[in-house]
Image (cartoon, rainbow, N blue to C red; front, side, top):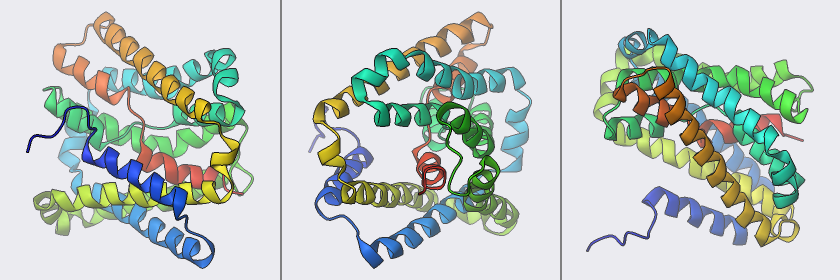
Length: 288
């Protein structure tokens, strides 16, 4: 049976399903506590497997393309935040203060790894550069995102300082990645042969995080506090931001004389934000 074209991909459908489940059956009490531990373990496993999967050869192959990486970093950590700030007069009245803060946080996030690489591969872009750029964005984002959040939102994390937030995020995300790199010598081939496991852990960890986050939000009355029109406006704002960055990435990559493969890489690596990294960071930065 042919899949209807109007349907989104399976993972998007699963995300919607998880949000619906959390809306009617949110985790509470000790169940929520246990679910939080399970989520943290899944996130650590995700970054461990990413570390085991990413070869040093891929890092070295893509690392030399510094002009491309600078442009991607500029789009991710400079243009996005500037757009978020510049659009405040329009966005804040349209979607409300709380959702606007969420948009600013989105603008401060690093790029996603798997989606950026997958789209670059499908479009026949520079895959080694995409791997290096997306991975570096994710790793540097562990340090840059808390700093940007501090500047944009005046949020310092649960511990009261940006350094505390960076340390907590590093323990949760960076240490498992480093452990994966160390273990790659012994398990790298197995991880490479079993990519479906990585996809399962990747998507599963995101679903766990989203369920936990929405459960907490539902318990705090998100659907009573947030009008449906604000949520619709939020979708429109995200589409607007994506369009502006895609246009900027296309024009700037042509302006700086990149070839077609590199332009594809810049387009996809510079326009995406990481849910898998962003939600765990939010749990640290906005805790309490």
